[in-house]
Length: 389
Image (cartoon, rainbow, N blue to C red; front, side, top):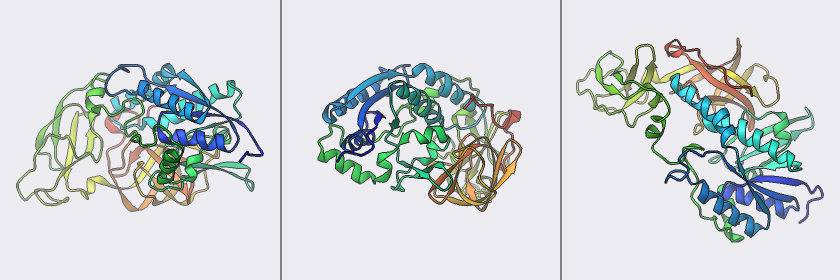
């Protein structure tokens, strides 16, 4: 059925099923649809881990089936300057950044949006599981969670502003993943059964430590438990993140003194990173006190409405795959604080704290300090000044 408000919409075609169905739905609604394939990474792009050539072939095949034009655009230089450089700075400073958040803000909804506007687009669209709603009472465009709770990606989109939201469509955000797969099979899309990508946007499925090792300096140092006992040696603090359980290379301490977190055979978790002493601190037991916190401070803040929400009770995520946690919003210099009535597990500096009011994503900031951890980490500034947003 033809839409009464036919528009020229440029769709980011990734080669995956979500963006393919996005393009199909918009064409079916009567819009003039153009596909853009974004190449964001060039280093070792011919390796087994980087599949951009395969993804472009899949995107082109989709465009052919749907009957739309597709353009290949190279944003690799923008990506390296605006996303990857920041990613490396954060890891070198001992934090764990989320490059997908920055990629959305700097590339997919900035460089890509600008390019689409030059092509005469009135809107852009991607295959993200989120929604945009115009609120006539406030005149604002609101970012909402996707209807499929297991696929909602609003966490990664929380830095989008009013100008970006006003130009963006998320058609599959109204659907569940099973329905997206069904549509793709029904219309004969060649990538209907293609596996979802799970790797970081530019790294793919490659071994992460091996990749990071090529770009940042590192020095081995001691691994100590919460009682100061040496359990082994780490390979460089940048390679570890709070809450990490795998890849520590240490065994259990078999005496009954593994207290406060569980028994002697409980697994070990990364709990603290001391850059000044180049020491990794680990604890035994998932619920060890060192892994739990009730308060965080976030900086480098971005609000979807362009201004901070009123102080009070909200919900928040401190990592992507997490249930919303009740919290209270407070103001602090250069950012905000969240107070949680229930202790949060392994809240990690460098990750994003994202605030919600029901299904509405309000925005968020980069976690700079966590109550109970020695912050700022290793005398580095709590948050490196990020590039202009």
